[in-house]
Image (tube, rainbow, N blue to C red):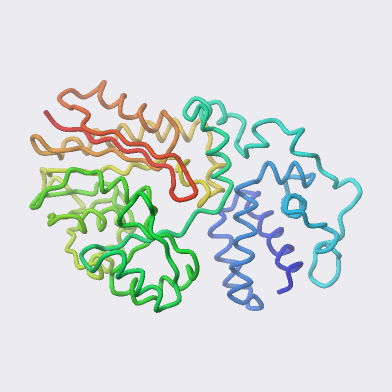
Amino acid sequence: MTPAARIAAAAALLDTVLAGAPAERTLTNWARGARYAGSKDRAAVRDLVYDALRRRRSLAWVGGAESGRGLMLGALRLSGTDPSLLMTGEGHALSSPLEDEGGRSLAEAPDGVRLDMPDWLLPRLSAALDEDLEAVCGVLALRGPTTLRVNLLRGDRPMAQEVLAEDGIETEPDSQVPTALHVKTGASKVANSRAYLTGLVELQDASSQAAVLRLPFRGGMTVLDYCAGGGGKTLAMGALARLRLAAHDVDPRRMADLPARAHRAGLAVSLLDDPASLGPFDLVLVDAPCSGSGTWRRTPDAKWRLTQDRLNDLCTLQTTILTEAAALVAANGCLVYATCSILTEECDGAVAEFMSRNTGWAMEDRWKALPTPFGDGFFQVVLRRL
């Protein structure tokens, strides 16, 4: 595909997403059917779509319309590229820009447009972030890093870097998180690399790794990952101490890959339909369903799908799940509440709501990370049963 054809393909896919289809599913379906598109073409189109969704409002403003074509026009203009060079109407290219597709300067845009945030959400973000608002919104407009967690049961960070380099994957250590490696080149090779296939590394954001490293582990503890999903934090916990690991998810299908991942990592994990059958537990981790606002650069269409009603429902669900999980914690044990959100109502607000309804708990640790070029937004609180 030519660069012009890639832009045209991205514009068509964006129209589908803007109409309400999930971005990931839309891209997957397109890739399966586009036999003419090579792996580099698919990757390039994917980047164009996700970059446009991250900056949906600002690109639409500059491109003159909130459409696939408008977003591509805006992206070209903001990159300093004359759209007429790639939108020629020839071959598979989009038609040439019209006079009424001039768009407007971002200098004239309201804050919601300039910061690429829904208007209803901006006051909540402003209250949560204060002086960090513009910096965080700027980070969320960028691509997230590809970060690996070194499995300390299999080796150390220098060893992992060496093994990855043998497969053409260049990494650099995170300066704050001792288990994290950021991939500089060769990210597409990770899944088939020897380091990954032998369990030496796993994909995991640096903030998630940092959160797990803060947990109060000791050997022999029984630990439950109550909202385990794919089990990334389950495996991260197991690499830090000799733990009896259990995982649960309201949708067991989300844990389908966990047994194979655990085997690769050298760990044993019990998958539980009914956690009470094995409890109580010394530590219960609740990585609760949330808006994902700290990770919106990775799932940018989620930012535009979130509504006030959906946020209210999530906050109610978070308190419900915390209450359910609390009943599984042993005497003097820990209940850990975590979200990849940066919204106050899903972070401190959820903990305060739980504490107001449940006595006998004390806060032992609170940690919050804002999105940076090196890690996603994350919030975590450790509560100790008195």
